Amino acid sequence: MILMNYALEIRDLRFSYPGMPPVVEGFSLTLAEGEIGCLLGSSGCGKTTALRCIAGLEPAHAGEIRLRGEVVSRPGMTVPTEARRVGVVFQDYALFPHLDILDNVAFGLRGQPRARRRERAAELLALVGLPGTGAKFPHELSGGQKQRVALARALAPSPRLLLLDEPFSNLDGDLRERLSLEVRGILKAQGTTALLVTHDQHEAFAMADTVGVMRKGRIEQWDTAYNLYHRPASRFVADFVGEGAFIEGRASDGDGIDTVLGELKHCPGCELKPGMPVSLLLRPDDVQHDDDATLKAEVVKKAFRGAEFLYTLKLEDGKQLLSLVPSHHNHAIGERIGIKLDVDHVVAFPRVEGADD
Image (cartoon, rainbow, N blue to C red; front, side, top):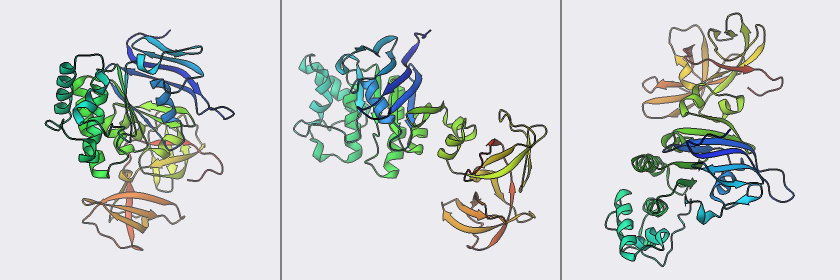
């Protein structure tokens, strides 16, 4: 039974191109009213295709899509894109070069009186931080300004759902991060339900309430950024999200894990049997520098990050770990330093023979 209190519901969506394996298969998610979701994944995982199916730009071959309880796609029935009341923001802005900014924003309000259209467009330009730019043309704006205009245009008709397809990929890193936070603020202030597609984890975590890590057309885990990082549901999610390294271990009695770095306790939900070989995930903040520690590791790489160094460390057995160390501890490549573990979230998976840790 499908509940009726979601802005977006997708059940077992499938799409494939002729003669090709499915690009999206078994794809399901829900978005509450006013929630911002994100599909995060590498190129080719199916995230943009899923977005196009939601928008009605591609016909889903199986499954069901509902917007506020209304079915807009199921086998044999597809509501046209223009009737779905879905806004889309593309990565290339898709602004009309021959129209000024005010008319670009007002384009989606056709059918309303011209005065009302221009009034609404001016309101949206002010909302996205571009008041007084209505008489300019797209070529007169920066990339960040163009993306704000594209957002204003998509919001103008008050869509039931806003879709954003890699909206900041053409911008430099600092602007991308700043704009993603600003856009989140705008969407939250408007109470807009939105779904973002990106390959950038920082962008996903800055904007979204819930993030779905995609792999081969499916969502591996639909969760908060915190849980994706600290409580990954699969080895793939653990590998994909954030930075870290795996080391070998063996499950002991009482939810413990024995490793070359010592014994770790409490791995709730790991479902490990005593004696089982495991792969243990260690994040850079799990591995701490300690001059008094008996366990030593060799510095093989270092990356200065202002307040911290990210060290790549090699253990005696050749395994490598990452460690975040305050930048006043400036150690040379080749130097051996003391380390200890301080793991708040123990994450381990049954070890697959031949897996590359």
